[in-house]
Image 1: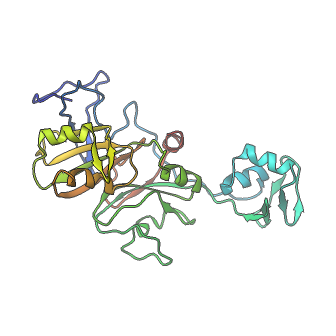
Image 2: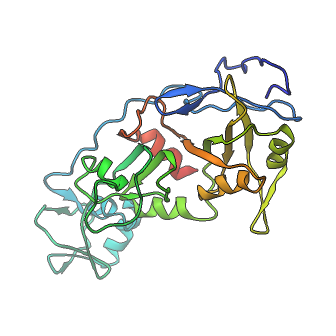
Length: 294
């Protein structure tokens, strides 16, 4: 945060703070009466994550606890408890043997429900403008799911929703447990957005948002807000934990600004750094762990 000065020093780690729009990036220049904190960044701070690889499909015989774990109903350790308790059947027979191997053609019944060992897939997309996120039985070319159709043979669902005009980072997975976690009001993953306004954001209004603005009679606090460095003061970087993208627009509209564009550049530990608009990639194992821990 530069406290009104025209320039600021880099932090001790030597990293510059950046915000990403499309495949390029612009640094956020923080403006506040408070002392400078950690700079905005949509790049990994400590090190660049390893290149993600395509998840391997499961083939051949598989240990029963792994089969159950891959299905997403519980962890492998929990699966062992269900197995020894007699709550798992294979081809109609109760299996209590630890280490039992399941063949691809076997039918596994877990606690009264037939399950399948879907491989967990995690994808990040840099969403373009004009694509909807509604559920459709037949995916239309205008649906955001059409952009990731080659990512998995399993159906993937978005984490949260975006309207057609909102751009940027979206997550998709078939991990229903993670979707529920990230959709919960108690979730703690921070999101960073670059917002374009119809006119310059007044410094006093920036401070109002920083201190907390009332939306629908509830006071909304943001973690950080800043002008985007070397850009007009219509370009704002904002970071908050709320999962509803509409809330970002509401913060500025409550102060009589028209929001021209909202671009999500980070979601928890996930960044769309070097990910062109309309393209997707698999998350790294490190990124998935970060989401689950967050």
